[in-house]
Image 1 (cartoon, rainbow, N blue to C red):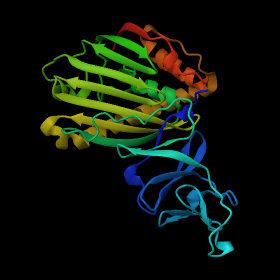
Image 2: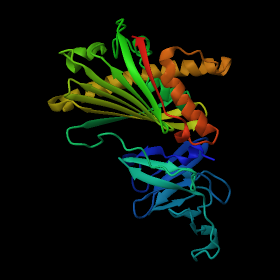
Image 3: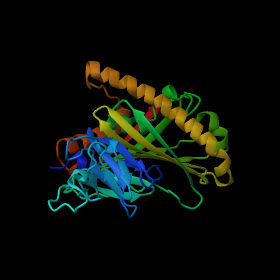
Image 4: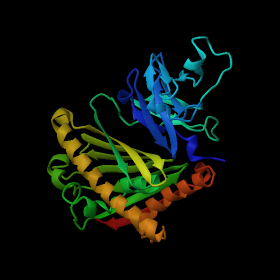
Length: 340
């Protein structure tokens, strides 16, 4: 059966894990400890000493080895116990090994996969245009008090933007949009048609001529969303979010704001960071409020026709949670119209 633990999830940014440092992490309620071995390779162990179950993350790293802070048991990057101080300096003859996990370092993120023998073979998501010539990326980390599915749906949802992000992102403008929504092989793609305006404070900069805007939103199972805007064929802005399930209703989101504004890349950086974080802060509040409602009343949602994006994402998530491959769902394409 397929499991959410078959997929790759970000544990940290590469720069956060320097030599002789460690990082305590949480994923699906599991405790993990992250450190670099003597060769600089990122390693992940279960955050539990085999001796007396103290968290290894309360210990220290020295010369690529992780030492428990209670009785000093020492682990290498493969999880093997290489020293027990109370037994003296002699090499241990009876091997003991902590639980380890698969790790990949890619795009300056450190990814982990909890299932060592997954039902389906996957790779970490490749961050769009990261370090591509002409592009700049700003990275943000934020914690949401909601689950992965609701976070992902929020990140590709347009109707909420005029109510949650007025002025900063969009203004209510009585503008009708049309979109084509496709679900295929665990992937949902929304292509918006005829969008030309309504970007709040920055309409004058992003699309001063009122040209057609290229806009796509995408969801990649089980936790990645991307939003692409092409303004006038010259400016390109990408929002990529990876939602990491810490607990049932607590999600850590890594957000890449990647853009190509030509000569304006450097000057716009502090503005993009400030306003990008302001938009996320507003989403944190509304998603927290949503979860409070769900905890009281459950998930008996009502849907409108433009919510087909949500239902496609939820259908994929349901397949994973029930152990089935979402790639086997029938392909679907819908056309929708809605007002913002």
